[in-house]
Image (tube, rainbow, N blue to C red):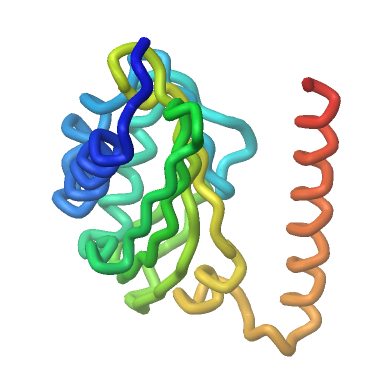
Length: 176
């Protein structure tokens, strides 16, 4: 497999984010391998395959019909071997539909968050692994899903989220 140039990668990832902005799961998944691994901080475990990823995307697009990543706020970084990339992004979304999983009712509030995606590319330059990282607590707070940061409930939730991240890092370390 030839090394993907930064321009090839930027074009592919621009197409990925445009398909996201168009709320087109089929176009997003056309850029992925059939057995794509999809990680999202709101999921208890990674999803595998087009069907599972399509269900997640449809759920997000239903809950957030205006979800978008402003193009001018997307930065692409390619690994030296050309097989991986990281993308820093900014997302804006208004929660007007139910979010499944985990089953949150719409709040009608708009939230913004900055995060990153890590991509691993497989055969033909298709995305084989997609992993998203962002501050889920801040985003949920902006959407009105959890109490303000000064509440006891919020401090407990932050502690649980940090414990979960440490646990995931520990498990990943055991696998490698």
